[in-house]
Image 1 (cartoon, rainbow, N blue to C red):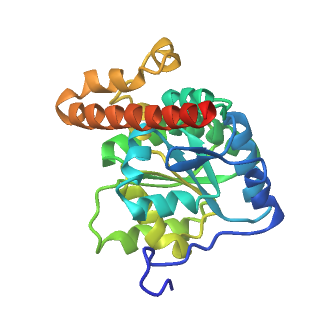
Image 2 (image 1 turned 45 degrees about the horizontal axis):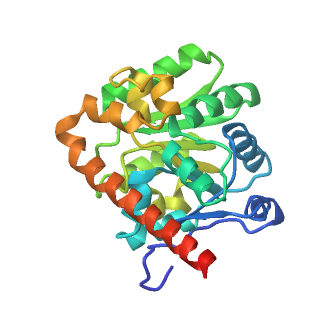
Length: 274
């Protein structure tokens, strides 16, 4: 137990040499979060190795909205800080890393991790569990993944709409399923709080919070065209799909991100000129 700190539990994260390999590659600090300089392919290979070596850990995919949320949410910030791997889920963060001369190789999104890890899990006979979204959406997402990867072992599916009192039922189902990989898509920070509060009981080797990715696989939401992703406008595509819900979030978070980034750049230029 944590003794009254931010966390209900001290997260049971491994500290062996394997886990420290990535951190030894010089984690990059972008504003208020560190990032591991990993490609999607490297992240997937790292995840499979984690499982095969019988270790446990979780991956955080941090986009601009999460990065800004962390500055006012110490509980979320601490959870991300404790992650075994922190990757940049957003082209603006990759650009920012280059402006600060701390280049990240590429963005690593939750959607791509689900797809690539599922492909690898099919080949390696690894077991996955999907938690999140509505009952219809998660069932359709699972069905579509199974169609794409027929030999993939999906050993459990459950929606993300449950009360705090019902959380223990979800945790027990995940643990009893024998899943090695858990994808949680319940939005930030609820998915992170779920993992934080139940980490010791879940029994999985790897957990990844994937936000609204299940809706993409279910077809209830569309992902931005590739050209919009590449120029950093995926947020705009999402905004156009759900303007009533997202306009304020993007207006505030994007403005804050630009302001904080400019402040860092100006401070660096000032120091260099003196």
